[in-house]
Length: 287
Image 1 (cartoon, one colour):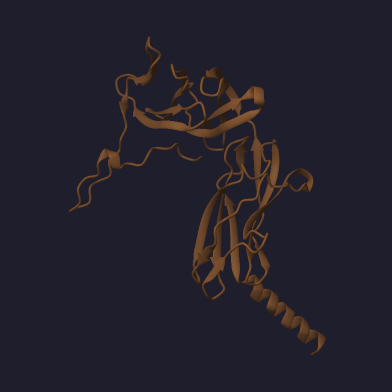
Image 2 (tube, rainbow, N blue to C red; image 1 turned 60 degrees about the vertical axis):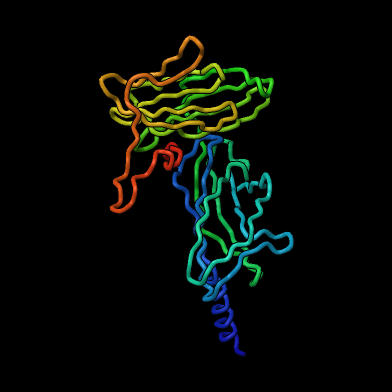
């Protein structure tokens, strides 16, 4: 075999191998707040011409990420994420959403590069997505309250923060144990109209209630627990009076004024209208 023919065979083999699996990685935003979920959307397309199964092989996980920080410093994962085997039919794609925040030390401020990889055991080969960039930054604090946590015999600090994106401003909540350097949650409560400050109250169970103007004549109401979980998220429409938080003498907090906004989808002919209990729990939109 001549040298040129050998190179041609090698080139074709390489192209064929690369064409087996296509991996794509996307982030919805370029900028994230420290400790909030950084959701990576990974799409895996099977171009092998046959059904395939992606699976771990000995100590090699079939799916992973490579993350680098400033100056190309590679970050070691905080723990290895093991995925169950995944079967993909020929010519089809599968999309997964994975939070990188608990997997890598990406809470420091700065710019990060991430690349998803897939290991195909049948070929003993890795396939890589194009690297993507995201930035971790701080938000502007606007309100803070420290309360006791009877269940843990400690304290929790609630913080409200704002961050201005190119086309909107978002309100963030953070729940942390500052004494032990533990952050339980950081996430967006949705958009915030800049002309009105959000209202915040802590009830008798030390749960945080937040009411924010998210659009003209529209208010978002959220309840956050001591563990950082979003316990409730509801939308109110302004009526004759603007919605506001009312703290009763017994420590209960509720929304007064306005009207709860429950949009109902038009009923399909021949089908019964859905019950209120059929609605999924409301969640703040991901900005």
